[in-house]
Image 1 (cartoon, protein in one colour):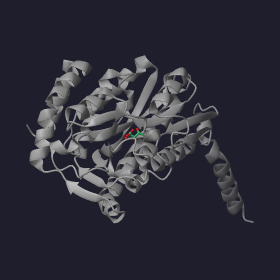
Image 2 (cartoon, helix red, strand yellow):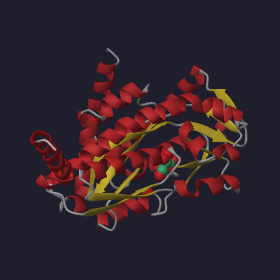
Image 3 (cartoon, protein in one colour):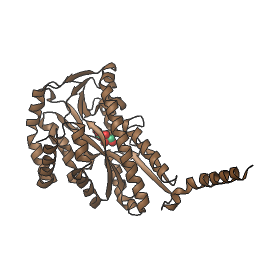
Amino acid sequence: MSMLRRTLLATAAVAALAAPFASLAQDFKPRLIRFGYGLNEQSNQGRAVKVFAEAVEKASGGKMKVRAIGAAALGPDTQMQQALIGGAQEMMVGSTATLVGISKEMALWDTPFLFNNAKEADAVLDGPIGQKVMDKLQDKGLVGLAYWENGFRNLTNTKRPVTKLEDLDGIKLRVMQNNVYLDSFKLLGANAVPLPFSELFSALETKTVDGQENPYNTILSSKFYEVQKYLSVTNHVYSPWIVTVSKKWWDGLSKDEQKVLLDAARSARDFERKDTRDEAAKALAELKAKGMQINELPATESARMREKLASVNTAIAANVGAELWSETQAALGKLRGG
Ligand code: TK8
């Protein structure tokens, strides 16, 4: 073997050895992260948690391990939130709507028809207003890392196609455990019943409730089409998910470890939004093929719903604070070129 070749081989060997230990230069300890979520593994939520887990393990040189636990096996959103606050669980992703009882500013995202499209949602959620709302969690024992997309919510039920406001009359509708949702659907004439997501499929199956509202992706991944006939395209609210960390646990992490989690939550967010939108674009055709009867809500009826819900907006504004409310309206005005 020539001298040069020997040197090259030696250099390559050193490089190969050094690569896996590159992370040692940074401050990483062995960490096990129990990461809970509510939907099943085959959902857009499950796919994104997997992407998050891989990014964390890679960036920490395998030191930080994520144990992803889906299908609400660690409990519904509200139970996991308490486990994070108490330090019994490290991380989760769930609906912002289920956080309102803990942090009232989160109710901003429950405002019916707040965003007209995903572009507006991304701009506000990823901008200073989204950050401000997220930062409020810290006083409550939680650290928010990123908003993921649940999506625009649409209505399903077994009674009748909802083509006008009055069609909602008396429909027993499951809503998230959140007063804005409860009040909104009561105002619209439905018999709203708050239930955790983990109990929803069986509640629909046993006809404990007639209907529910969720994005297309969830109606598909949770197989609601098996127990629901009518899907009415209402797009009544854009629903974010939020990735949160136990503050108790977070405060004990090094800066490097915190950065790994933040970066991974954001890169998984970018993956998740694209994946969710791609899936949503094809979902209606699939749901139709599965036998659902789909109808659009005429613009005039959508306008009637908005009008009916005006008092909810007033209540939300009071709840989140006039400043945050008007700041949001101003940001939206600007985005809309006003
Ligand atoms: C999943 C829930 C779900 C939400 C709901 O844990 O409860 O209807 O849309 O995504 O957060």
